[in-house]
Each structure stands twice: as structure tokens, then as C-alpha cells.
Length: 69
Image (cartoon, rainbow, N blue to C red; front, side):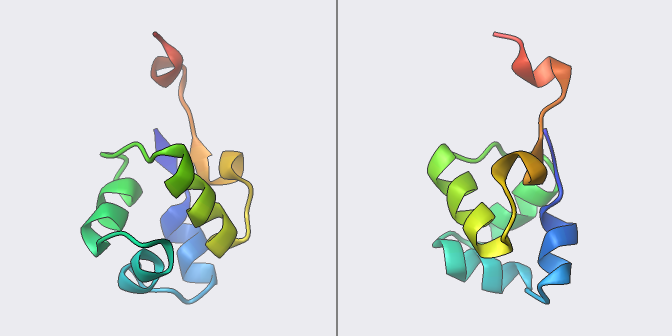
């Protein structure tokens, strides 16, 4: 899964640590999300979308392979 977290976070002038604090996770979680190495829970995706002011589907981009059972 690809994400636009880094881009959208930069627009809001938020560091990884600040975003992590806002959504209640460790900075490393944001690092892994930005690198596409971690799939967030629905709750975390929702919290990130609220902080960044974007819809979940505008932040997290699913590729065809991600949608296979």
C-alpha cells in the first residue's frame, strides 16, 4: 500500500513525532506507514485522516495486489 502521509504531513508542517503524538502512536509507526511497510488499523487510518484533514482514501492508496484475499 502506498501512502501520501509524508506529503500531507509536510503541508501541515508536522514532524513525524508530532503526527505520532496527535494520533497516539510511536514515531516509528509513522516511519513504517510512510515507507508502506505497515498497514494501519481502521482506527489509526481514521485518526490520521482527521489530523491531516483528508479522506482516508486520499491518504492510503491500495494497489491491486493489496486487494487480493
